[in-house]
Length: 121
Image (cartoon, rainbow, N blue to C red; front, side, top):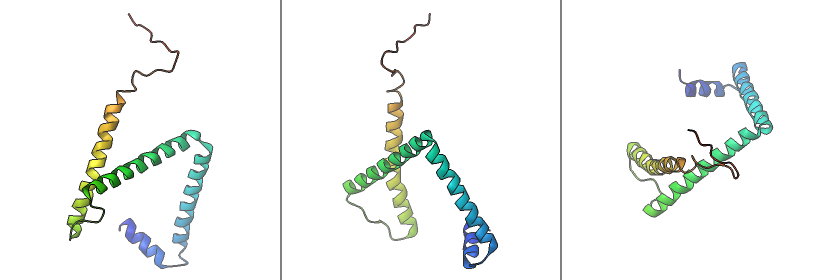
């Protein structure tokens, strides 16, 4: 049985105790994550960076779609639409990974102001 089938079956009954237990467990997990997020500045920074990266990806994908002149779905069948989506996702993903790889070397030698390099003989 797949997860989708299980959730569909559980959601058909309003008073199912298993459903209530699963939903309560989900609320508990969300509450724990929210408390960790509020307490941990490092987690907040990481989440914020991740959201910015995702937003940049979507802006790049939108710009590429605008250049191509195609904002709508292309294809007649589900397979053609899926291929079109995969192709539209490939270019921004490739561009981001290439940029990230090339910028990685830019910051390797960077040091805070006033820190001198120690010579090793």
